[in-house]
Length: 209
Image (cartoon, rainbow, N blue to C red):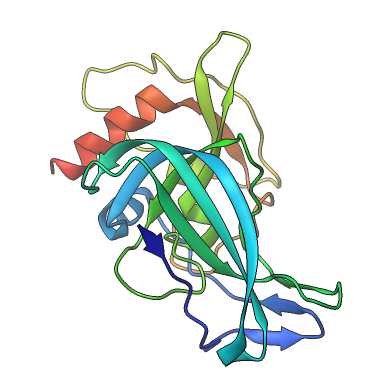
């Protein structure tokens, strides 16, 4: 399955060779509800092609293999996602601010919209994809925005989640960002290490509401 990028750059401003975008902040219930598909997959291949119909605009194609589906999917084991941006034939690079950067072999948790054409198919752009890493305890974890930490079901403790990370500024990172607004650029907001297994439980719980 190939998820194609939308080439009409509506709402995005071209500045030299860089594209910039403003993105609305997403909360956990919205992330789960708006994602038509949720899965963990491994980057198997990355290629760049150029669209002749768009004056050679570069498009980066990322193939994800060994998919573990949490929502949607038809037992596909592989998907290919397209993003606007990449290297031009002359060696220059067009980069969209907030666009994901992947490496072959990495494992990622993905929340995305399917069936239409998008510049970036992930829900909330960088708010819809997370690199999976293994911590010192041997757990598969992601660095998750503190403002999007899912609520614990009544009677359940924090088992499975590790602590890590920190705030930037004096206000509580969870309370100060709950209002609607623009999302902070990726890497510019407090995060917390949470196990993939625990996060899956929270996602399934949210879907069951």
